[in-house]
Image (cartoon, rainbow, N blue to C red):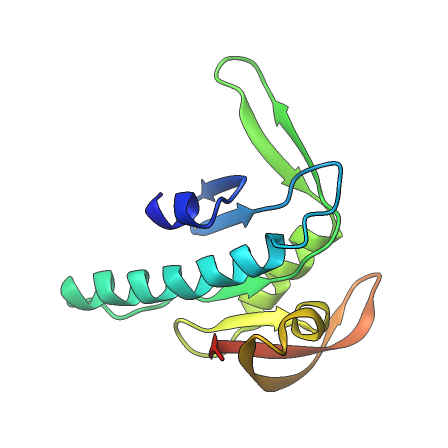
Length: 144
């Protein structure tokens, strides 16, 4: 919650073993949304690693990051639940599932292209995403 508040994330949703964070959910483009999500991912990775180390537990989590259009809406009756759909959400999940190594933040080429001047990345190779085809993936390592 602290990190989400500091980075002004729109929503954080936890569903089982998944956590979905969103920013920039506005009609007008938000040029800082991707920066805030990347900052949150790096901060959350450090917080999770520290908490797991304090509990003497091995880290087993990975993160995936993509950006683009998504569709969100509250669904159901009281209590309503905010849900998010779209290709961006699916590709971010593919990035998390395909990440190698605990604590890895794997990102799409779209993310890398926008953030490569502000963050350090390692190339991860190619991946296949339905409706997108082959693309490159990168590991978000740190701030520059």
